[in-house]
Image (cartoon, rainbow, N blue to C red; front, side, top):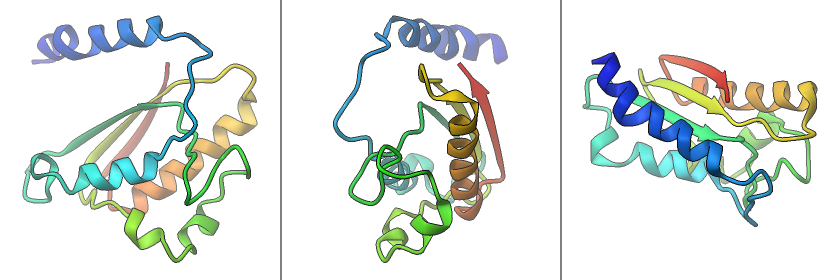
Length: 135
């Protein structure tokens, strides 16, 4: 099963990620909303026995709710927003694996703060486990 996952998923994913230009970007990156919406899909609903979420991202949220470009990632500040309830995903018991795309010039401190933000978010949403792997 691990070999099949490697050949059908991981190898093609890594190949695609290596082909993306370092300067590729977008005006918005609503990661919180995307994860919340995914958690509502039938294929990921709480009744599915073994749920696994794989996130491949630089994890820089840039949405109406918050922007890591405008302010330092602060989970408690985002959690206190009136709109946070709509961003909270149901990840109860899910295994979350984050493939963290490092960004040139971010530095180690920025990366640590970003990962701390997301670890707190996933744990609050009920994730059974959260791991990060730098790409």
